[in-house]
Amino acid sequence: MSYFFSRLIISTNFETQVASLNITDYLATKASLIDEAMDTLIPSAGDFPKNLNKAVRHSLFAGGKRLRPVLTLASAEAVGGDSSLAINTAVALECIHTYSLIHDDLPAMDDDDLRRGRPTCHKAYGEATAILAGDSLLTIAFELIANSKNISSEKIVQIIKEVSKGAGGVGMIGGQILDIESEGTEVEFAFLEQIHSYKTGALIVASIRSGAIIGGANEAELQALSSYGRKVGLAFQIADDILNVESTAEVLGKAVGSDEEREKATYPSLVGLKESKELAAELLEGALEALTSFDEKALPLRLIAEYAVARKK
Amino acid sequence: MSYFFSRLIISTNFETQVASLNITDYLATKASLIDEAMDTLIPSAGDFPKNLNKAVRHSLFAGGKRLRPVLTLASAEAVGGDSSLAINTAVALECIHTYSLIHDDLPAMDDDDLRRGRPTCHKAYGEATAILAGDSLLTIAFELIANSKNISSEKIVQIIKEVSKGAGGVGMIGGQILDIESEGTEVEFAFLEQIHSYKTGALIVASIRSGAIIGGANEAELQALSSYGRKVGLAFQIADDILNVESTAEVLGKAVGSDEEREKATYPSLVGLKESKELAAELLEGALEALTSFDEKALPLRLIAEYAVARKK
Image (cartoon, rainbow over all chains, first blue to last red; front, side, top):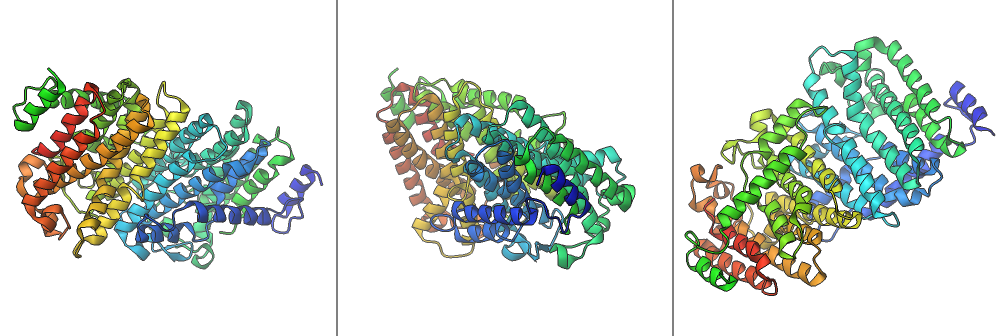
């Protein structure tokens, strides 16, 4: 079945798509591969203090979607590379994502008790340990990348630059601070987009670019994938905002309606649900367009983009 | 003046030493070099959110001793290398040290209001921003190392391994968690030594080894410097414990007597002040012994070891 045919079916009937690649299976397969690698790569005993380790694992193995590491693997494949070389980097990106959730959930930040259907890290292990577990995951991330096997040191250095930028002050951390500072204030649409592109988009772009670099992408491919990543990242965040309004705590495994309660600027609060959904659909279209020069090896990336918007949790 | 002569004078009269190298001047010169580099390397404007940047700089430019980065530069020089190549790594290590102070000072951890004579980061900017400022500094650290100029990618990767290990779960973070968990409990001497070697020693050893790697150290030199680092790190921590008992808040720029208040296991609380001082002196002797095969280029390292024990704040 050609890509275009699959694409058509997927677009018209995502839930029951009969595409050549089943995205649910693909995500599940990659996620279990990542979970296995995490289990091996993240210290579980030895000299690592026991409680720190428990807290780290409590949050890491809570059944996340593994979107970022899957994007890393899928991007390596999209440019014809061997995604098994990207496993350390993929796990590193999940570590960074998880650390950000642990810190965001802290009482001083979003003060959330529930995450992925389980008590948040500080609820289970106390605040001090949660802060340190987050710090530890961020540190492990760079250690893991540095310890990548069968990748040149040049590429490793390049990936560390990508990841540190995406996770830092002009990336994820910067977005979080803008987000916190904007609570309870009037936010312009452009500023909301900046918050989201920093907070979620930057690390997603880094995940994609890192995988592509490992896979041997050329500059044009990297540019196209970055564009894809920015759009998917934003679409993903808009979908998150929508779910926070429309879904239930049972389905999401975390509190809903919390954005409104905190007077957080979100797409639904700024432009309404309908326009938010249209915007997400437009971004999806743009993300797919960015991949037009890629062959069928980019099918997983295309399907992930659809999933980012259509997902129910 | 020969090294041995300098050494003799320094040992007998540290405060008024007339050594060929004045350690106070050396530390001041290197510290100002590091401060200048920090000012250039740490984002101060542009896309970096303003409040995050302010909080980061509040803590970074609070007049710290810059011990870790100075050790990095001095270690590069000790093995005959060009310490200017180590400047990014040196700044990175100060960023990591500073992030650890910001997080340690948080209400959930040590709950300190004063640090280096100024309000702690969370006192000045609020808890959420302080957590993120710490996260940001840790992230910047790895970005800075990756952006080192005129060092091979192989060496950069090696340094990231050293630094992430020293800062992580079997290093600084691990030590912090053991320290917190041991508060109010009976601690054996060996365990206290483990806490300290994790909490302070590991990052000091990483600082030294990173500088030495950049300077082109061979394996024997790295081994000797690691031994020096472990001893200096422990001596430095014992000196800290002693100052927490004997000094004043005015001199230290932070609370004194706080260890006792928190029933923290320290060297003075475990073996008394007198034995603690003897232990520090022994460690100093051992640190100097570890450097016997080094020539006069290691004089700064020797003097820093003396300073670590003899300092008044």
